[in-house]
Structures are given as C-alpha cells and as structure tokens.
Length: 404
Image 1 (cartoon, rainbow, N blue to C red):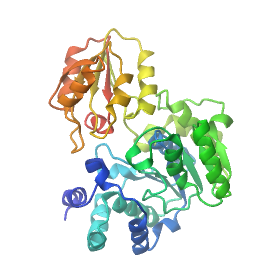
Image 2 (image 1 turned 90 degrees about the vertical axis):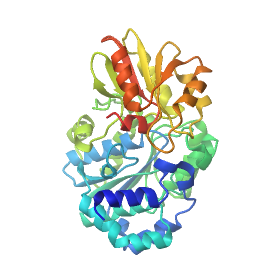
Image 3 (image 1 turned 90 degrees about the horizontal axis):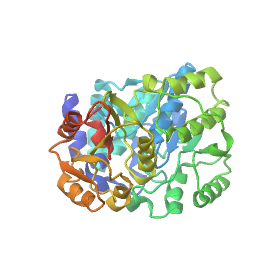
Image 4 (image 1 turned 180 degrees about the vertical axis):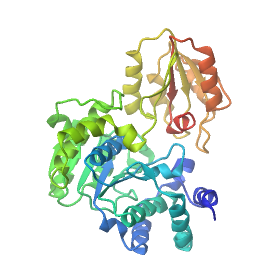
C-alpha cells in the first residue's frame, strides 16, 4: 500500500474516536500491552513525559517540548487529534514522522493488528513509541488521548506525570462528577514518579493527593507555586494556567535535563515555530479580525468567550459547529446573544447536523443561518463582516481543522 492507501486502511478498518466516537473507546489496556510486547517494548527504551487533563494537554505538551528543544535536546512529541495531516501526531523537533515509516510500520504489523482487532489509537501509540525509540530521541512528550487510567498511552513509566486540569468532557466514559474524572486522569500517576497538577478544585485536589500518596509520588500544585507570568506565542487567556504548569514541570525536569531560564523563556516564545501547534487562539485574518480556537467544552469555552468580550469590535460573528456527542444544554447558554451565527457541520462522521444545531441554538436566543460547509460558513462570515468586526471560528477541533 502507498501512504494514502495505508491511511485509508487505518481510518476505515479500525475504530477511531475522531471519526466514530463511543464505539472506538476501549475499556482496558490489554491490546496496548499486547502491542508493545509484540514491538519489543520500545516505550521502555525512551525517556518520557506524560501529560493528561481535560483542556490544555496539547498546549502544555507543546510548550514542554519547545523548551527542551531550545535546551538542545532531540524531543519526540506525540499529540492527538491531528488537524490536517495524520503525521502531525508524531514529530521530532517539529519534523513529522516520514510517510515511509508509517507505510512500513503498518505493512510489517498489519496481520498482528487484524488478528488482535487493534483500534486506530492503539496502533498509532505503538507507531509513536516505535518511531521515537528507533530515532533515539532524548525524551518524548506523550499526550494522553482521553482520560488517563485506561488510555493507550498509559503503558509508560515517565520522568514526570502532568495533569493540566479537570473539567466536564467525555463523561460517558470518564464519569459525571469532578472526582470520578479526576480519578481517571490521576491514573497516569506512577510509583515514585513526581506529578505536577495545573489547576485544581477542592474535590479534585483530594483525589490527586490520595493517588500521589498511594504511589509515594511527590506532588506539585503549579498554580500555588508559580507566580511569574511568562510571555508566550500562545496568547489565549487560558494559557496563563498552562504556562504555570509548564514552568513547574521544567523545574522538576531539571533533575534530568540542563535547562536555563533563557531556554525556558525562548521555548515559550517559540512554541508555535518549534512544534507547529495550531488552533489555539490563532489569528488567521486581519480587518476583520478572525480568531479560531479548538475549545470544545464548557471549561474551555467559558475562558475563550470571556476573552472575546475583552476585544474591541463593532459586530460579532461566529462560525460554529460541533460533534454529535456534545451536551448542547451545557455549552450553548455560554454563547452571546448579541452576535450573528453561521452554523455548520464539521466534515467528520460525528459532525452534528447544522440544522439541528440551529434549532437548538434558537432556543437559547442565538440567531443565525445554516451553511453547507465550514468553509462556506467562514466565507459568508468574511463577506458579511466589516473591517472593524470580529469573527470567531470554533465549537469543535474539527471545525478549526477545516480552516487553518
């Protein structure tokens, strides 16, 4: 198979959360353990950093990787989902995994994958570990896909574990209380491995402390320990918390790596250049100002929508689409009524019908129209808006993916 045929096989033959949602979620690590054993346990030959959390995982992982790159290290970065190209998920110093490596990995292991019915995500995790080991990285930053305890990435013993925050998302898998979700995320805490917590509440703090105590792990609450705010290429208001998490993580990682204050500052400033991170309060047009952001749950959207209100503009427009497992009663009340909406369906099987989204949004006083695609919605917004207006594109990672 060539590269495109290989990708088509990966996407269509095996469950993929990005496409299918709930049916792709596996409830244990049996398959992943089988896979890494089959591959000769590449994850044991590399140093890793493990990052979980409801929001901010991608930004935090990318900032940590960027700082370590500035310090001169060869850094693997595994993140999900991808926006444009599958290979975005697996990078070394911002160079994507080669198409040939993907082709060969699938070809060499295809019968094993089929025999054991591995999911798309399980395969991709194995691919990342195998690539990083063969490329002999100094360290790999590994972002959790969903949850933590049962996530396919949770077969590593990292140098540090990082949990950015806890919010309500994927509750059909992770539980419907802050404590139950925190318990799933805390599942990445390992015996004698330090853990850095970004944000916490009274409910989640006790869960983290209990797990850290059980694992005899040093625990650091970054929001209590870090007071300085460093400038960064990531300008979303929510990055304030993520930056504190990164700074505390680097403080602990200095036991393993030589990282100066200059490396830290440059890493935060150059994170987009060093990692290719997209879709985080990203400005893609001037006059009118257009911002796209991947925030897709109430925890993330509250901060983003608050930041929009600080902007100066005459009229406000939204290009809005979501996936079909979103709790609309949870997120739609957050959006401002004094705006015009272009509703669209992201082009993935899980995309929610735009007419249904309009119908639901109307009940919350949101006025707008349905467009046939994300790109059409964006084009209409651009044609309607004046140069002093503001356009926000979001609601789903997959809406942003079609624009950036």
